[in-house]
Amino acid sequence: MTPAERTPAMDAMLANHLRNAQPALWTNPARQAYLPAALQALGRSISLDDTQAAAARLARFAGLLADVFPELAATGGVVESPLLPAAALQPALGVAEGQGRLFIKADHSLPVAGSIKARGGMHEVLEFAERLALEHGLVLPGGDYRALATPAAREVLGRYQVAVGSTGNLGMSIGVVASALGFQATVHMSADAKEWKKDRLRQRGVQVVEHTGDYERAVAAGRAEAASNPLCHFVDDEQSFSLLLGYSAAALRLQKQLAEQGVAVDAEHPLIVYLPCGVGGAPAGITFGLRQLLGPHVFCFFAEPVQSPCFMVQMLADTTPGMGDHPSVYDWGLTNRTEADGLAVPRASLLAAELMQPLLSGVFTVADDTLFAQLVLVLDALGERIEPSAAAGFSGPAMLTGTTAGQAWLRSTGIDAVLHNATHLVWTTGGLLVPDAQYQGFVQRGRAVLAAQG
Image 1 (cartoon, rainbow, N blue to C red):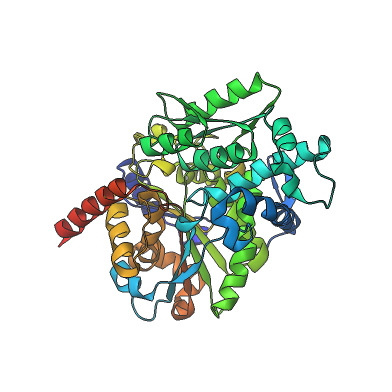
Image 2: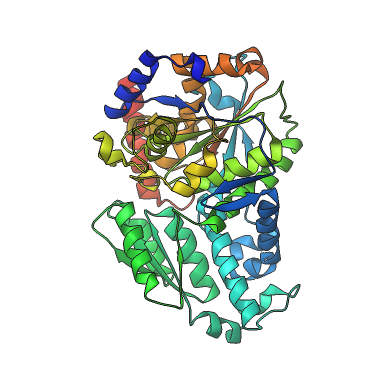
């Protein structure tokens, strides 16, 4: 909504809900409909050209990826997820007839890493490998990157280390891809990372370093250790342009998928996208790509757990004087404890936050019980298996149509008049690799929540 439509009572209610870990919606008063060709973040200019360069890099490595990962042989090394029509799910989510169509961008089924992190994580590892390969003459510009699978090339890459700090899914992506290419791979994991993810990484030959603190401390420890090793490349989820641009390349593929499904994106047919958010790099990269590629009629919302709303807290600070430059969820009396382990982040990426100031439409929060309930609704309606963090976006449509703040935003943008033509796109982010015993536990809890709700 516009600043003129925001009232002190609404702001006070938002702050109260935020502090009390209740679901809330914040809408961005600084969003710009029309953008310059390039945007600034942390002193660097990025544009759609950078997104296209990331997509081209992924294409150059496709042959090698198909050789290294058998699960990519059928796609020729392309890592992509389907765009799924989800009309059968709409009644359960409260999306009434005349309120638009629902689709799922099914990154929970992405091969290799099993989550959205395959996009950015794979891109950054490949960018590092490409630089080393060209420096050492392992490949020539325009050459066949499958040469990096030879013993001689792997011996060279094996001298180098790739490290990352993670709650789980990014570590899975970085560790699996780096190890497969021959790098020494190290993942610094926080206390809230799931044991099965640590076990899976170790099975792939990845060194897992466990930390007693949260995500922020794991990243800091990994960054400090990497700084002492000149042969180590640290993938910094809080500050990495390479990660962000890898995620942004998804917009190019989604544009084609929307066209194939007959989905228009224009003033009469708005596209509203709901993206789970941890530190912010993945949803920010996708939002950047979509807004640059598809224009002002794409409206992106981030979804966060009620105890870990780091991006909402940061965006409030960026648009409200006197709230500090880089606040933490702990500053709001929140615990940062959530079953959505991939979203358990206390402080947002400043890179992502700065980039999102003119792009993002809003942020909303979701209770853990709701994540489990919606995981079950997705299973029952569509047969799709997602993890709790991947369910965060499914509250988005009802948050817009069923709350005072959401309805005010719909009116302020004019979307209320064309809502029947809108496309709601929920981006699911992980679930493919969750062990069956773990997943059945998720389902059991979700069914208990639904039963209690009657």
